[in-house]
Image (cartoon, rainbow, N blue to C red; front, side):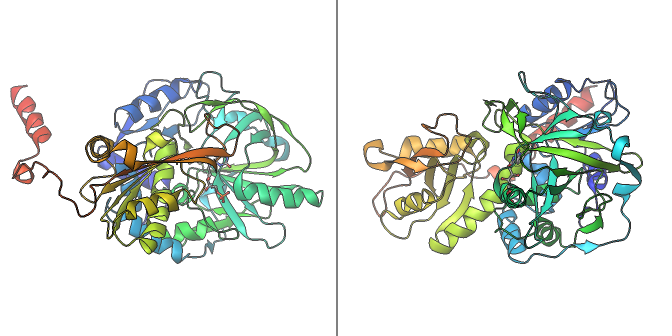
Length: 456
Ligand SMILES: Cc1cc2nc3c(=O)[nH]c(=O)nc-3n(C[C@H](O)[C@H](O)[C@H](O)COP(=O)(O)O)c2cc1C
């Protein structure tokens, strides 16, 4: 059975000893971020901040900071995750409309709206203010009515005002509305069931509803309820919903903000959201994620969908591809590692060339199938021992790139480096040393734990 909401998932983590309750009061200005940074850097637990200074709402954070918790949310294993993703993305399950949703147990609209009541953290030094970092922004296409849902960073600007960084499909929707001198209605869901933020990174075609993809991935339709002040539907079991509109032709300074690349992005004029309502559960939990220097939840959230989408694409063209991974070090997509069994000489190079045919990549490393692409130490061992740089490093100068790479010559451009770290095809190569019987050795950490317990 899929998790019906965030709190059910938190209980699940608690039962498995992977949720830490922080009972001391924490300040939302940088202190929450510091705790999440620490747990991210130490493969620690998800965090539940019970007392947030100045607020009467708890905060959950760091939930996606480790892949093990994402696998729990997806109810799958590392090996099966890509296939599960791919199957679901090919078979969207439309949302199911319901009359009532717990996300509307409490309703504030018009002059009652006060975003300052939400315990929105401030993250990095130099950030322009508090930021909502796990707000699923939902909007409909002004022509077709098709829904798009994606996480966008949102800067707190006042009691009923947010700044928004609207790239991707939201930018298309907003431009269409603006061309008609119309505002674009939006709804922001915070604290959804844990599968919803995970589909967000799947590059769905324009017009595909990400909530229908979430339904397919969780194996049960996402229940949605009508908003109170805008003509949109939102996940009914969300903790908090913010409703509003992006007015046409209004731009205000947004930023600076420490981004997924690990660098601060400057303040620039961007769209704003005029908030028309805030609704929430009777005892809402505010959910946040950390972004910044890898690896954070932002990187982990991105990985699952992009690993799966590139895996499907490559596997269809190069059947020897066994696994694809975009490590956190690639700041959300700049580095790809592909493990494959080559079927012909130089096939790895075709894979590299194909990868540079898409806009995501800056460094592509292809390794043999015995290398675990999720283990960067292992990958670098292959680069060090199987690659002859004068032969196996391929540079692709002047490519179209993403828009966040701080080293880019110009925004939107990049330069690619491919490394063929596979053994030369069909040629003799030294045998890898092997130790037998490792799988029969018991869990040493559990043994150590027992030894400690026996002594105390
Ligand atoms: C934590 C987090 C924060 C994000 N912040 C933004 C953002 O501020 N603006 C944006 O356009 N995309 C942001 N993204 C990326 C988009 O959610 C993602 O690229 C999504 O697939 C875009 O969907 P679209 O293609 O439907 O526009 C963020 C992703 C995550 C995981």
